[in-house]
Length: 91
Image (cartoon, rainbow, N blue to C red; front, side, top):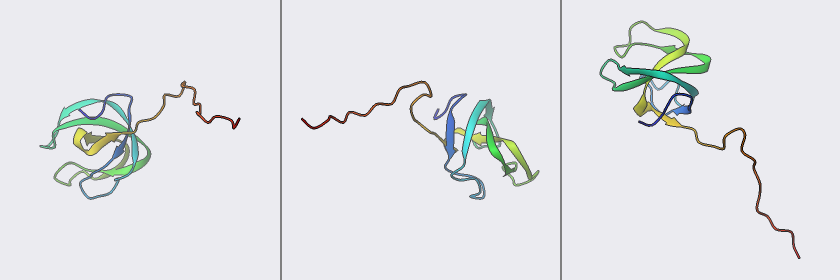
């Protein structure tokens, strides 16, 4: 699995190329869907076009199903970590 619930992830692939590069929140597991493998329910900040794997039932929505293979987690520091630099003052 690339992702887990609560992760922010970047979409690296989509059925029609739309949505690639979008950042989504991984909400919960959905399971196998339409021959695309294991999928997550994801939430996007803006509505995106969704469809079944066969292209039917197209609609705008903020909730989507996304195959795990099409997502990559966005890594970074947790919000409560302190960021410090290691720059030393000249002597």
